[in-house]
Picture 1 (cartoon, rainbow, N blue to C red):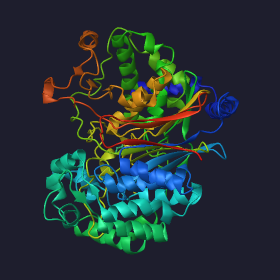
Picture 2: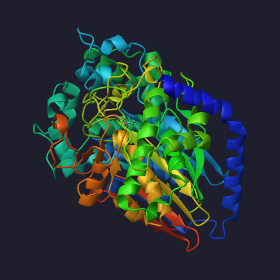
Picture 3: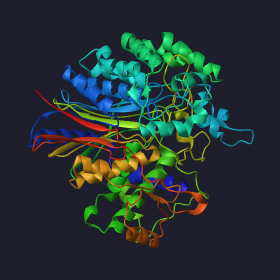
Picture 4: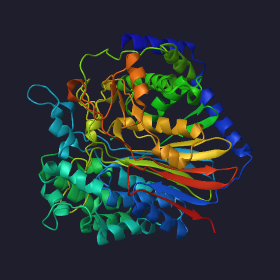
Length: 587
Ligand code: GLY
């Protein structure tokens, strides 16, 4: 820790004035965009999301005269209905918007906030250890939801259509039902014990007296009514009145403590996105309380001097892993909610700092991460969802939303129809103790009343004079490295679908191991990495501590616009069979 602080102090002394640098970068980006030789407007709308019904809802709203922001409200709300496993009204999210009219990028932060009663002591057992059941299950695991406020904010400030109209597809699908798909049925089976603890959850998921089965029609009448109250009354239709009352009663009945003031006081924050350049591409991405943008800036700027595509696979993966390792180490110590802690973004995202990190990489050997002894817990199931939109006016939306782990806290407040998140586990509830994703944190990410927990969600835009792309994915702490690999894929000229399908590898500093998807790397590459000193977790192989890498991860959804050919394309992750790219030509 002392060594890192010294490095930071040195960089502060050496770094040129950072704020003017950022302003110049923004100006240069605007000029480059304006100077692009290709088309100035896309030929239609492209939407990629993790569920066909959500993509179709977005296209329906575009056909009704809406813009990308109205479509985003429709897609987001529909995902909340058809993917309760991943996100919902009881959760939060980040919406990165590009408003073509003003040329402005804005980051709408709808992350959940900590209730005042959720002090660190609440999460410790009698021995002072982290009580994992409390941190991921039931009322204490839930933060105050942010997603409904984002839907209202995006519709009212950026949309063309009334909220009522944009929410109509989600209300219809909640009322009439949709067929349960394999991932949802498997997720339910995995979380069944927790889901069946709570009467409100049983009323939704066991409404027919039976467990959730693939292929059955899943109707959510309470959720339809909750959405109708939101559609009819906006912010007050969720954070005050009937829905708020049901939420407060439901949380209290299970032993939690939320107040009416905390609900009514929830606000989204509009933040400046983080920007930087990589290999001729402008990257616009998530600022804190996401750790994603800072880590991306660090990793890409560390990697910038190497022509990665031309390197042998083992060398390319080694260098990329070393960049990942360093960025995730800094995530552990410095990242948190910028409304509560000073996050040194200007330093961490500065090219001079990246140069220092690069200089510490040995091209032939893995750098050990073992500042701390022992291995954090395994990566567990990961959920969350992402969608990407470009419309015919050139507006863009990259949105990642979540209830955290599978089905969030497992708790539905009776009558509301939606699951509450278990996002409190994304705080460093006990300093230095890993959370469900195996990532740790310290003071910067300690819980405080009203504070937003650190996230890895990384909705991102990238643009060059030739091409614009929107991308993001779920995947817990692995989100950031998936977005990194996606950006590198676009920079290598891959199509949107190829980017969504890219094989994945990941390193997060601790545990000090490279996890890879099944068959993501050639056996010779794995052998070469091991010879350099890397621990590589190969799916199917037993590893020390009984830990195994999962076979595959992520659910990346991306759209891209080729300005020279003036064509739109999308990529939906082949790991998820129910995702869909929809393209609607402009009239
Ligand atoms: N809940 C996952 C994340 O926000 O990183």
